[in-house]
Amino acid sequence: MANKLISEETEWSRVSEELKAEKIKLAYYDNTLIPFLGKLQKKKVLDYGAGPGILVTALKKLGADVKVYDLSEDMRKQASQKIGKENIYDTVKEIPENNFDFVICNLVLCIVSEDEVKRIVKNIKNSLNDHGFAYIGFCNPKLLNVPETKLDLRPTPKHKYEENHSYMKTKKEGGYQIIENHRPIEWYEKVYKDTGLKLVDTIFTPEYELKQRKIKDFIIFKLKKTK
Image (cartoon, rainbow, N blue to C red; front, top):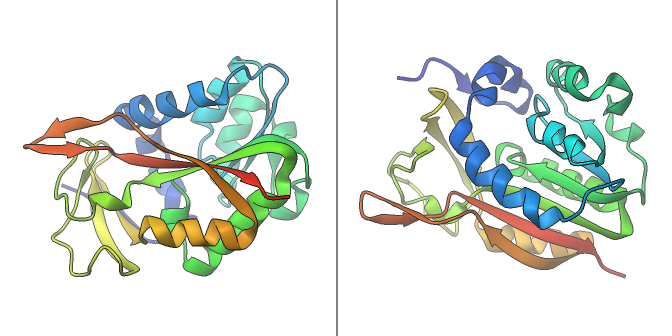
């Protein structure tokens, strides 16, 4: 079924066309997140790990002053075609500190190393202004034992939920495979706290039922800087 394997964070440009076509993900994740942002007119928004810029394009149409950072040069190029090159940061060092009303980081932390998670969370904290909020989301770790959702096919786990580990899963929409880094929700919450971010809310995408299992595909953490 799958003919592409994404095992490194630098490889996502290989499935950029598949990412654009992921309609179910868009319906569940993006449509859950956007209402939480409220009125976006003139709000400064950074999408950290924006991919081809699909979500940030929608936010720009809603009046937000949007900026993008992505590790992939190809992804930055695709995003720049949608929102303008002047709105793209080529390096982390270009991202201004204490600046953004919202920083969004979607489906990134689950595909990078533990050390990189900590670096990214620190960068996000530093880029928020004192009244800003970060929304960090990824696939729900509680689905580790769920073999099939509308989005993914997962193997039988070889590790417990509490154990940090990596496994390969298949994306049903795009037909490609990724190496996902599983960590329990509590592990992420500790990273946020240790970095100086306060957990304001934990949001899940809408629940549905598939093969007699109740499923919430994504978890989104709403965070703010601690004083």
